[in-house]
Length: 321
Image 1: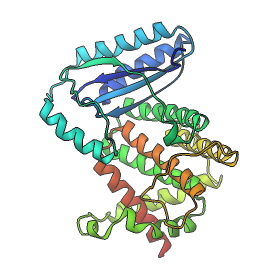
Image 2: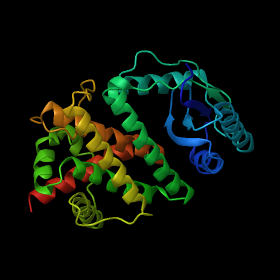
Image 3: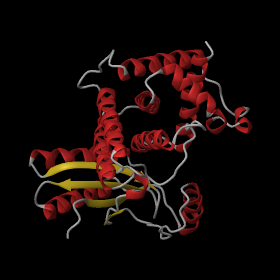
């Protein structure tokens, strides 16, 4: 039986923003216009060297879709070759660190020293996302998230605005999980040792008054949206994110009630110590999606960690007002 998804890995060591905005953006518009594409999503990854993973779910003529996608990616890589080189020694050091962070013992130890496109089978993470039905729901969200990220990348949104959007996406995901801001603030305060360990506090830069005011306003807006008191516009990327993340939450709750959402055990830095397994599973699912949005936007891991700290601190300050 043929795999439903076409999966391509485009290896490139010069950053993948332009690859996404130009090659992927043009490709998916063309495939949609020809009625050949149901959905797509992408993410950035390190295994084998920096690369973009593109997943395409064809509506028809999968062979043609795969050929057009491969050609589009290869032509872009040829026109914009990498200017940074990677050797086996450098890759081994980086890969070992990333694999350790992800608890991976089995990963590709070959570095791709040249730009190129490889067809690599997509293996859905059923254990991580709680089963086939929940994984399909997550994949639908991945497609929405990729469309949102593509809009921002095509608009040449700078790092500051990307970080601001990611902060808004995180507060919306948290508000979807717990619409009551006071209750959520208490939950994050209870989890503070995880997301703000004492040994790290002296090294952190405190947010400015302007950052505090902007984050507080975004937190309160997110909870208005979650409560239905405010509705973002249909063309607003933040509105698209909200509708998608809340749809995923509701689907996961339905599957959970039916005993068909059972992800493998995991822990999040925002997870309160006394939360139930069921509530914790939903929270971790939503936070995984925020992490993947940050990946699609090209935010470095350090910025994502700083973002969680800023948002957590904002909620805790609300609690102590």
